[in-house]
Length: 588
Image 1 (cartoon, helix red, strand yellow):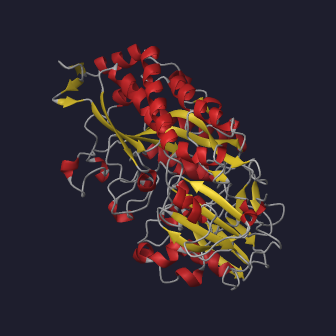
Image 2: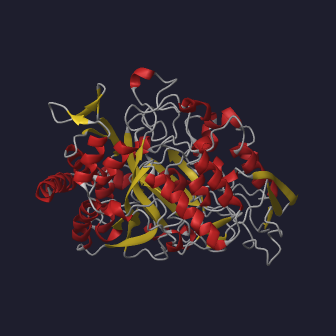
C-alpha cells in the first residue's frame, strides 16, 4: 500500500515541480506593474517603503462580515480593527480599547452578565472623523440584522444589547451569565466598521453595497487605494493612524493568484515578494527553495485542523436549489452518509501519518480532534484514528449490509457508496485527495475528486454553486480554526441554528448540517459555566461528540506556514488571529 502511495506522491510532486519550473509566481509584466505596489499609472521610487504581499487565494471582498474565507478576513485586517486582538501566544492585547476588561479593573460585573470596554480617545477613522462608541453599537446592529446572513453571527448569540455609555465607553449586556465575555469585537473576525459609511447597508442591502464592501474606511495602519476583486489590493498608509511613525511602509500591495508553490517561490527563490501566506506546500519543495538564501519559512501552531466535512444532507442535484444540501427539519438525510457506520469506516480507512509525511512535514501532526490547542482542552478519547484500520472499516460496512458489487463498489438497496469529494485547488490538498481516494478504494468506496479555485470555494457569493457553504458535494476538505484561547464560539458553530441555507444567504458555520439537541444544550451550558475545570470537561465532551459522530473527520493539526524575505523584520506569525495582526510593526 505505502509503495503504491509513494508512487502517487512522486507523480504529484513531479507535476508540481514541472509547473514551477515553467512559470513564475506572476508574469514579468505583472512584476513590473504591481510587484512594487505601484498602480498602472504611477511609479514607487523608494521600494524600501513598499510592502509586497502575496496571497495566492484571491480576496473577493474586504468586508469580513460577508465571508468566512481567511484570505478576505486577513486582507481586511490591514484596514479594519477589533477592540482587541490575540497575539502569537493566544493572549488578548488591546487594539481600539484602552485595556482588556476584567472583574479586577471593573470591566466585567460580578455575575458575568455584562462587559464594559473603554475605547481609546486618540483614534480616528482614516477619513479623519472620530471613532466613537456609536460605531461599535452599529457594527452589532449590522451583523445581527434579521435579514442579513452575517458570517460571524454566532459571536453575538447571547448579546442582549450593545450601548454607548458615552462616546468612549461601550457596554455589552448578555442574556445570561457569560464567564468568557470576549467573543464580540475581539479578533480579526469581528472588527468595527464605520457607522457613517455603512448606515445604508443594513439587512438585505449588505450584499449590494459594493463601494463600501470593496473600500471600507478603517482605523488600521493602512487604507484602500484600489481593490480589484480576485486580483489585487493596493493600500496606502493611513496618515490618521494613532501611532506616530507607523506604519513603517508607506504603501502595500496584496497580490492574488497563482498557487501555494509559486507563492513560496516568489519569496524564497526570486525575491519578488516580501511575504507569502499559507504555504501549504510539500516539505521537500520548501526545503529546496530555502537553499536560494533569499527568505525564511515561518511556522505558527494554533488551532488549525485540516479535516473532512461530511454532508449529512442529500446533495443530489436532481433535488433542485430548494432542497439540495438543506436540512429541512431532518427530512432530507444523505442516502448513505447519514449512517454512522459509513462515516466511521471512512475515517478508519485513512492513514493520517502518510498525509503528514508527504504533505506537511514539521508543519503538521496527525490528529483525531477538532480542538487541538490549548493543550488543556485536548481529548485523548479518540486516539484510535491515528492507526489506519482497513479491515475494521470493511467489517463495519459488512455488518451494516453494504456488500461489494461486481465492480468492487459496495451497495445496498440499489444505492452505491459513490462519493463526490471536493476541496480547494492546492497541490498538498490534491495529493491528500489522491491518497485518500486510494484508501477508500480498498474498502469498496468509489470516489470522484473535484477541486475548486480557493477564491471561489472560500468566497461569500450567495449565487455561486461552488462555495464551501453551499456544499453541493458529499464530503469536502479544508482547514478551520478559532481565534484566541477559548473555543466556546467555535464549538457553537455546530448548533442546529448555524446551518447555511438560502434564508441566510447561504452563510453559516454548521457546514455538515449536523443537528443534536444534546449538543445544543451542552454548548449552551458551556457558555454559562465559570469553573475552569468544568469548562475543560465540557469542551472535551463537545469535541468528542463532533468527532465520534463523524460530523467531521479530523486529519492533520496544521501549523500556519508562511515565508518572509530575510530583509523583512517585525513579523510575528500568529496562529490565533490574522497573520497581519501587527503589520504596523513590519519594517526592513
